[in-house]
Length: 279
Image (cartoon, rainbow, N blue to C red; front, side, top):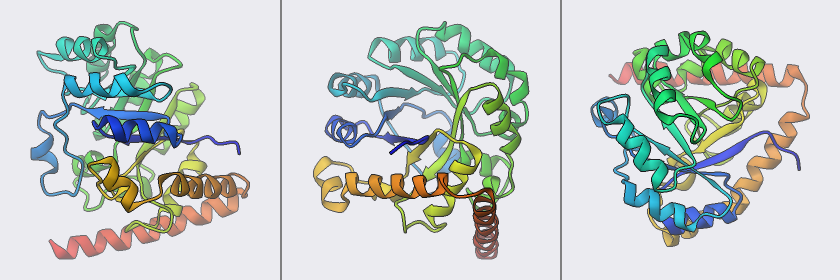
């Protein structure tokens, strides 16, 4: 079955990372970002990691084919150290979060110096709006990922999927496709689950030409150990369901995808309205 989408799983547990790799998860994501993250997201049910360079090394030791990506902190006085340490401990890709300008991107790229490909996490309205100012700096193995949690916070919205429903980064997605730069966005729950049904999120990945999606906490039910993960879900089976639905969507016509987009938009704004009334 052909596929455009690839899966990422955030974990610092080597056993989970190895198991996910055998289930055809193409990228393991170790998250070392801490600066300012808790303050931004403390009221959300979002991933807040405390992963370390030791975790990077431990995960790198068990992987054979899945790519190991490490998210560092936003640009700061220790960025060079963080990049060097991540690469020395086995990172095969570095992600930069919370940037707002092309200057930050260029500083980051200079420090990485082509040693590994990079992923730019566009999760501020400036990063999304200013994409034309830095897209030319990227190589074909580099990527952009649109982070919905922080993007929604930055835009003072009530629900993380509002930027998707509002088509906030659709121009950016088209620009990246035109430059043959891969992109992804958000997180995805198991098929049939999610406050916003995952089939509509998956449909937007297909419609926009996305290549990457994070398997969300809702997908793996926040499992911390391999035993807990395998007792909660059948990972190969759930991924196969996503693949089959993705294939069905790929074979559908533009009218179907556009209709799905309109349904997603309606559901997102209904959820957002409820969240506004709760505050």
